Length: 349
Ligand code: SF4
Image 1 (tube, helix red, strand yellow):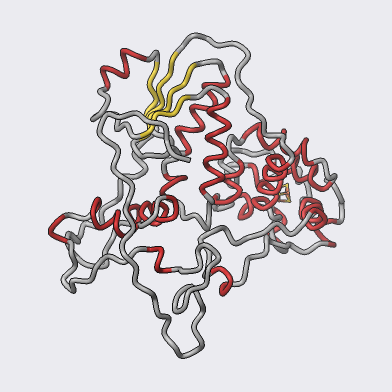
Image 2 (cartoon, helix red, strand yellow; image 1 turned 180 degrees about the horizontal axis):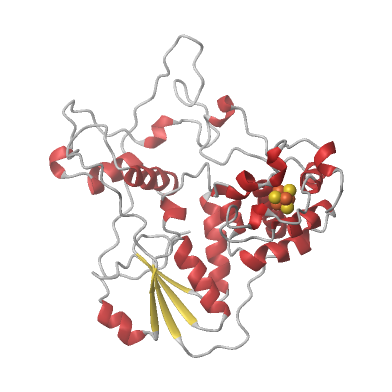
């Protein structure tokens, strides 16, 4: 317990958000770190409970050592806080951004006040470690000679790959999409989890010896027999992209889109160019496009003319009150070519 009276003296302060109007011109994350002093105070709010419900079954599913690293934060010992955090959490930079923070719901501090900012503290610890150059590749000292294939590069696949690689096995991760990350890459909007954060982690894992094979759909491009013949073990970490049906036939209905298709297209638009074009030509059934109104697909770039810091008339600007925003039409951007079946090629950063 960094400060016995911390929870009485300091109020809960969350990471400040950029004002909504300023966010309109960007697809990036919009929370910022309040600073070292504020973070120390937030760490000092933790009471280091005798029975820490934050890390119990009612709180963190990973059983993170929350009181321990809160104590280190309050003592400004961020490196040791990082070491305790990484004991139980493979990817704190992801959970610190997108976890629903069950630990905060279970926090004893919230019984009579506001919970400790556990998730923000976690993110501050790991981002501080990346910024300080502490997150260096840690390849295993000895290899066992065993080969393991991991199918799917979402959070489960990445965690399995990292743990197995650290035990000395040679791990290959197969991914159907053109970039690794699964739902982290294509299922979570950029404003919640910047894709550079995912690629930063992938680069570290590659440096540790994990091999990523993207654009390979296991079951189609690679059979289960081939996998079993080439590896000592196969781990299936896939299926999160399979949507749950509403039980309603929405085939060809305008304006009804699967959330995963939409989120994937939105992220592709940021990383490749035009989501609308990709979505219209690759994911929609031919009978459903063009739409009955006959409108051409609208490239997402024209949605926000302010992407590259440029301000064009009629787009990317906040219109005066009472006036509708106008959008300049542009030609559809070319979309990236689909990966030929069976081609294993490195992903694009
Ligand atoms: S329950 Fe809350 S106050 Fe208690 S140890 Fe966990 S984070 Fe700290």
